[in-house]
Image 1: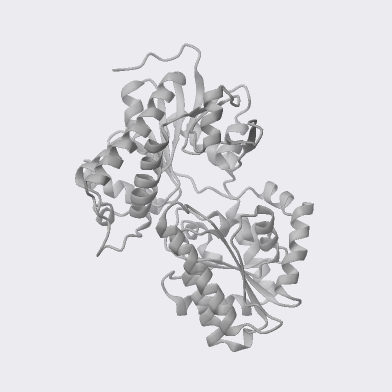
Image 2: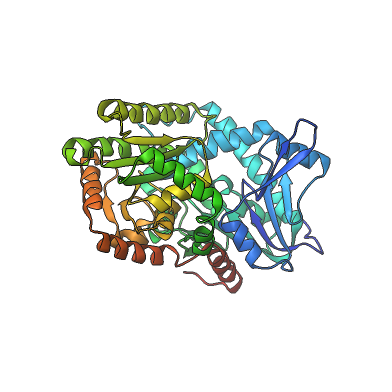
Length: 468
């Protein structure tokens, strides 16, 4: 049954699991507010304060839930207090342990997945979680409003919202890869159809690359009788050059550059990687490739340091904790095997520090971005923009960013440790002139669609009914 639209509702609505604000309960009981950044934040700010925009998101922490209970909030944000157990089942049980694994093709298929009664119980929570978003959006939207739903957490929302509010213009954007039909078929048939039909409730679907858009279309042809009236668009999210270059020269970054230079040692080259410790990022094989480089080209020993930042991700899931432990183990093994009193081959940091990441970007001679599979990978786009002397980029062909950056990167098969080691050697041996020229072209491609324009382009396409 359709929900009666609000007479004075929002004209532009964004829906995502994580919102632009978070809350922490302090010892004295007060609430501390934290604010996030990213493409959606800058995109919404770009449409101006008079646009009637609203961000609908989930309360993720105890502090967030307390803020909702107290009626504390930010203008333009509605935070949903979905029961913690329902959110956990939907977010960890389904979104991150099933849909993420399918789209990144991460399953060890002899043992997983197992779609048993527990999966069905968690799927019911995923449905309830999506329904809470759909109902909130239906309640808040003005007649004919534009709604931009984000990512794999909310695949069912467009279809649910279409039933509640057929007057709305609805878009969904996928920030991940999309699985090819033969891998998407791992899902139970009814679930596969439900996901696709949920998304096809949108007027328009956005993807980061043509490859992911084509994979979605192929899944629809196999499982859902085609796309119907839904249009498909490709929007390759770029780096925010102005923000990055300004932020990378602030005082805290300069301090961290000094500290990193001490850790690296004078006159040494740097291979930099900055990732969340996420299974798809392929950090362990990256370390093994660096070890292979030191074996195959001993001339680089004591002349290069691998600066590896592996920031914790999803540590409430055992498989991620195990992966983080393996990253540490391999890094320590390399340092024990090859290190000398004056040289630590791997400088590993696992505590998230954005200023230190920018410092590493500036110092990078080589950036290593070797994901197994990635929707885009903004690190590949950010390092060439920020690096002081221009860096060489060693890039997995399975990163979405490869579609735009492949011509000036050194392309690797992410599973091929020997091949990746060879690319690292080639990158280190590259002359400064060629490196700087490549980095200049990489930076231009990387910033072709900055976050605010990326958002506005989708909004305009939704409003005027175009694809592409």
